[in-house]
Image (cartoon, rainbow, N blue to C red; front, side, top):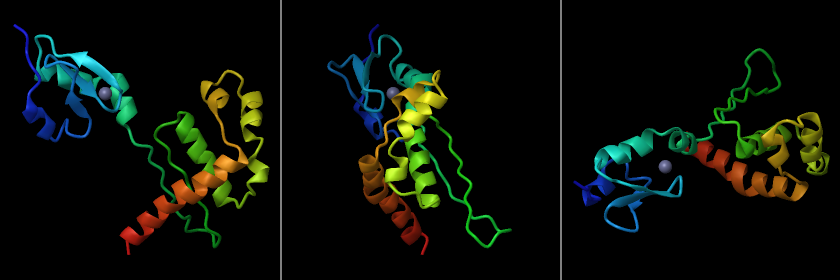
Length: 155
Ligand SMILES: [Zn+2]
């Protein structure tokens, strides 16, 4: 017996952020993974199965980075904790490192080539793209506003 997509799933706190109805009533679509899957005979269990799948869990994982000032030194140092090390995370880490150490945008311009030479077997290094223009853009319109919001939220 086939099962159908239920509207009530759209309001379920487990699914509301990523689940939408598929191209027909017998399928559902994940906004995070950009895949449509058949509900077949499983219904809600098919949705839960997708949600617990390795790919979905990996894609829904937020990149969490925290700066923690060291107390033993007068100069602020930071410890970067990173959960997910894919291309985006590597690029974000690189931006944070550049900001933390006051590197000029030009001094980071060739980092992609350097990382590819240093880590030839790394897929992340191969896909790393961060020239001075993108670096400036990420600082001014990505990381900067993020930390500004974080700071003002705690005041
Ligand atoms: Zn998914």
